[in-house]
Amino acid sequence: MTDRQDDQALADAAIDVSRDSPLNGAGVAPDPAWFEQSVVEEPFSRHVLTTPLHLDVAAESRTNRWVDWSGYTVADVYTSVDQEYDALRTRAALSDISPLIKYRVSGREAVPFLNRLLTRSVETLNIDRAARAILCAGDGNIITQGMLFRLAEEEFRLVVRSSHLDWLEQSAIGFDVRVEDVSGTIAGLSLAGPAAAKVLAAAGMEKPEALSKGEARWEQLGGMPTYVSRTGMMGGTEYELWTDPSDASVLWRRLLDAGRTQGIRPVGAAARDVARLENGVALEGVDYQSALTAFDSADTRTPYDLSLGGLVDLERTVFNGQKSLSRVADRGSASVLVGLELALAEGAPIGPVCMEESRVGQVKSHAWSPSLQCVVALAVIEASALGASDGFTVETAGSSRQPVKLAKRPFLRFS
Image (cartoon, rainbow, N blue to C red; front, side, top):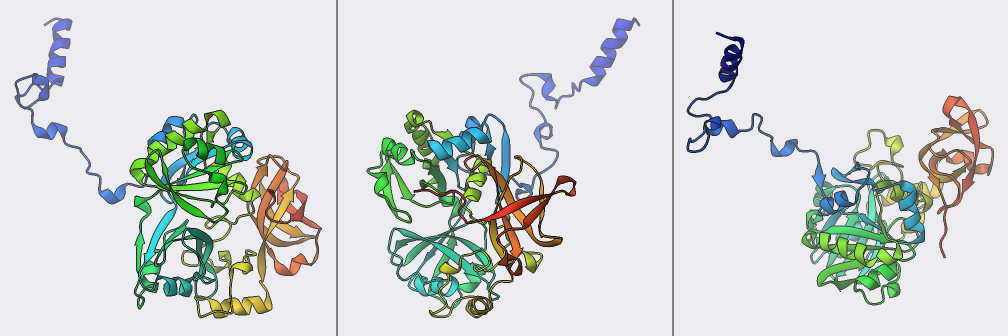
């Protein structure tokens, strides 16, 4: 047998030409086992969730940089943080906020139920208005916070960053109320920037500039029912649009098309985080931990610790954490969240906050502010150290210390 014949024999042996093989060609029924997956994937083994806008977002992305948000995959950066930040602060910026948790609270006792949970009363909240909502545990520490929308006399929508459905359902026992997680039925978009109102007008909304902060109304944008609210956490002009997931993609494209002349850009999580820091907003899971999920109670915060005491009404009927919050209000917080401005290079690592030789706090989050041309940071500092207005330093790379100054929040102010 020649070498060529030997090679052919080996090749024939490597190919399965049995009757059940699909390699036998047309007319031969293959064994179904050929097409079976070797490993069966259980439904719960998937860790990546995609929003209704995922394909549209992916089409706009030029970096393929993604980040996790409550298990969902969202864009971190589309082109560059600088370009996206510039659009957000000077023109118009569109982003996907669908991963926010949305709860529907409805029923005859929806108002008493929410009054029992929130740090201030909801009775005076008008229909189609939104108000900041804080929910505390019995020890006064924050479980979660977000926005509460009143959709009807006995129907509310609570929008927060983390899921606590079990706790809400347990809290509802004894109330004639229904609590539902409707996150999967509502897609969310954020439209921010000085030209945001012009973009909405071009997309079909009548007089969007007339919508005041905290106000919301139903609109028909290209025939799509959309609940438009003047809410958001980035400062300046911002609208949030809530729509059916099946309409989200069309609405996304409509807004981008309407905003071309205004220089609109899709904006990812990185630029949004810079903006929320400039606005001085503390973020659950970053600057503090929920009272229900924190591993260390030292990482939890009361509303007073975050300078949100104005959202606590201690003089009304009983609500969660009221007694504990009264004690904090009387004696003061042991530690508080403050704003810092640092003359550091962009991206420089930052460590503990010091006063002379003592460590008195820790930076929780920070970012370079292109508008302020400095690093802005949120830090938790011992309240006893706040008697001095200066003299603070932070530890940086190489154990060197750099001076910082306390700054009022928000860092960036808008007219």
